[in-house]
Length: 368
Image (cartoon, rainbow, N blue to C red; front, side):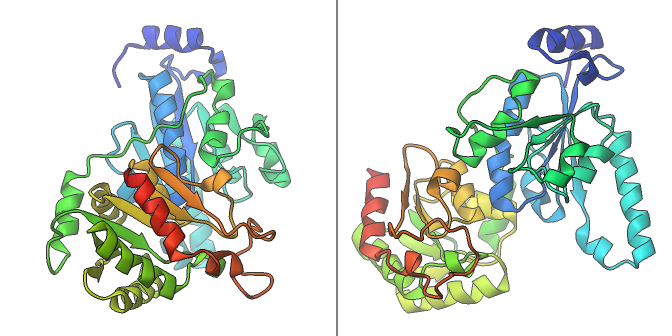
């Protein structure tokens, strides 16, 4: 990304980076470590943007799960993408896996990163930070970061307790890198070709304005009842004059999505299976998104789509959608925000007590 070594070195030192953050060419080289799923990746995009804005001449790489590659490949602010081939490693023998992991660590180390920003601070991510060979390795201090992994980092951050949202907390890791605090900004790759591929998968090309409903979630405690989903979908069609597409992630969620679409009736269809970049492209054309605390919700919100998020065991203050056209709804039960994958009481009451009518009212509000 442009610039000679001398000018790069001068600007980076002037910006506040220590000399150890500069490589042999006089410029900084950053590695972002984000090994999570879709929601974590979307909430990490502001870190990439902040680094690129502060250090436009720096080289920036990203270490991600292989499944996240479609969303990060060809990103305009990213120079290099490293993906962890977990499926490939899993198929190997113990010795083969060990050999492959060593080769991967060598690849990271050979890339010449001078600064690693680990957005986890976990026992799973810390070895990658060390393998990068970066002189400066930044992550979360305990308890947000794992205590046993602390020794892998040169700088550990305690985000302010007043900083609640995960996207803002991630940006706190950039404070020692002289990156000024700012509102999180999401930048996505060009989705034109992805949209073409996505639309080609539909039996009938979507026409007119449409809403997207995502009823699935990785935790059973986060799933809004299918009957409530179907009732909301019918109301969006009849009261808001929008077609509704029900999306899913994986075969289990697909069955759920198809069931909701069938129960909802006319004007509601299950969307086909889409790659991550195709899903992003399809969501970018939506007039409305409704779903739980899931990756697609974060994606829709990051794209600036009017979003209504249904919360139960997790906190909207930490992972809710952001922006003037984003709303979150909770049942207000004392046990809400328990952060458990399964309901302690076996009732999932924090999700079941949220009425479709209340969600519809927020949907209307987001559209003004």
